[in-house]
Amino acid sequence: MRPRRLAVIALAGLFVYLALYTWNLRTGHLDAFTSVTGLELTGWAMQPGRWIEEKTSNLWRRYAFLVGVERENERLRQELDRIALENVALREQAVSARRLERLLRFHPPKGWTTEGVRVVAQRMGPAAALETILVDKGLFGGVADDMPLVTTRGVVGRVLEAGASVSQVLLLTDVNSAVAVLGQEHRTKGVAFGRGPGKELAVRYMNINADLQPGELLVTSGMAGIYPKGLPVAVITRVNRSELSLFLDVEARPLVDPRELEEALLMRPVVKPAGGE
Image (cartoon, rainbow, N blue to C red):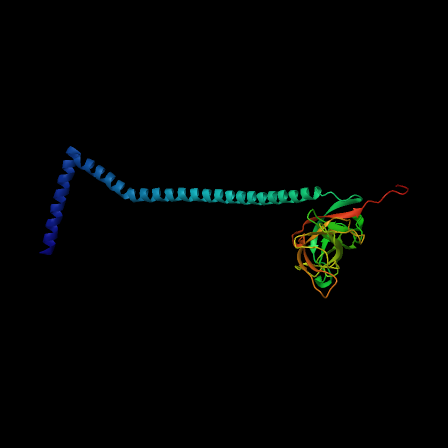
């Protein structure tokens, strides 16, 4: 029975095919239907591909855009860094110019001249035992031992040793430093001794009867011959009177902080020409 059933199905199929073929030859409807159906099927099959292509193109365009934006951002960051560095340099130049302008306004006492120097190092003594700074001029620049170093605020110290191109300056605060001073108001004479870094000066040999008070300015007296007379040195911070001493116990704060010093003025006496008055 099965072969007969298969034969019947085959004959029926053949009949249907021949009928459709004959009908299509006469009308052409089947060709049109298959053409439209094929196009639709093709369109449906291509839609996922077009979607993938569109998404891929969008992703690529976004990637290219982001890469361009990143490069532009990097360029802008570098430009901002350059501008920031230039601003820092310009501000530093402006601050330095103001410091130098103040130094130029310093008028030395009669018979003295000044020359600008830069501080290049701090505490250059053996094992940093001395309170000193190093300035950028030496014997080749006409620097000699004991030349005073000052700023517009006051005395810094004196040249301890002049090298060929640099010089070592002993600061007021060093324990080996001693400067002859007098009170600007009461004219009481004494000697200001250094007591080490960060400490105030000890002013000795001032008359016990002198009417000194904290806040009075001490200036150089010119008695030792190293500093000219009248240069600001320190401000009195404490005055103590004792019945056991003939002198006042005085402390004074230096006017110049060497830790903040970058430029200063070396002073030298004017050498009169031979035969001059």
